[in-house]
Image (cartoon, each protein chain N blue to C red):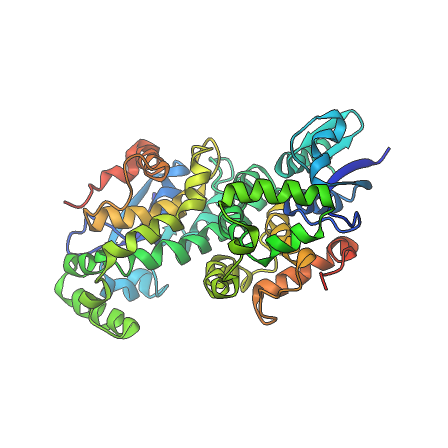
Length: 231
Length: 231
């Protein structure tokens, strides 16, 4: 029985967009494991696997259920040690947490206050729109449309914040070195999130980060390209 | 024959301050290898090991000479595989490059344009002062004393830039997890650089980054504390 991956979607069940779910999907593809995806709108997350978790991604692998993208990667590396490694050892696992922390403190805050926020809202089915607007506006303390004002002006600063990643990718093909590791998918998930929800180009074509992202889209039979860029 | 470590110093040969040299020193201590240090002022770097390298740290281990802190860590892990690992595997080695890139793009630019710059200059012997001022003022295009103006005002922004590290260290003791890896020494080197050259406190005592730095100072018989904080 193939592995089930529960992924967040909007009105179009074929366009998963969550950065965390993309990390899990790429991890499964990296391991070369067959998997089927189950689309889950925001308001149905609590029903996944009979209320197993309050978040997606969730995977079911036979009798095993795992929630949270990092925990899923850890599970897959432990359960399938003969398949390509996601961490490259214990040191890689520990330092992937730094990559996660950096990504969630650097890329996610930019994406989630940019036009992507409104695009996500607009892509949702009606009950999810209500849920999304209410929960996010409670956090931000203002309408979504006001949160995203000035995203173009924040783009230059965001570009500079990518310098640690950029200078690394000037020297090596992937964060994992010559080949990708889960750390690559952590960062990839954030840019894929943007790509799926908005046509806004935040990276210049000549940017080493853009070249790396294209390489990631090509990985594992083009898993990332199976969902087209937002038009 | 014990390993020789060539380290950058100022007028006081007992106060090595270079972040890169501290990375190498901590790597040697981590491996539990005996080593002797050779103090090297700026203007004598080209004479180290008969002009072997244009930078320090350099180590000599029997017939092997290695320059550059990262290359030294790689050499030590390869040459002494039975000693505690510095990378925790290939994944850890690859991702340590991201930690290096982040540190050099986040912490180093702050330190090297802060009052530490003038403190380093003032701590040097006369010929090194001339060399240091000329080379740095050529890069900055202005007097050292002008470069460092406003460092207090830049401190708040610097503190925010540490958030990816901070949120990681709220959850785990070291970048390496429960125990340190070379990645810890990469970041440690930058804060030790500040500690050795200036009494300026850039971290609040309650900051998880400060607590982690204190833990690092305690490692390996207090290797980092052997050189006292600047008064």
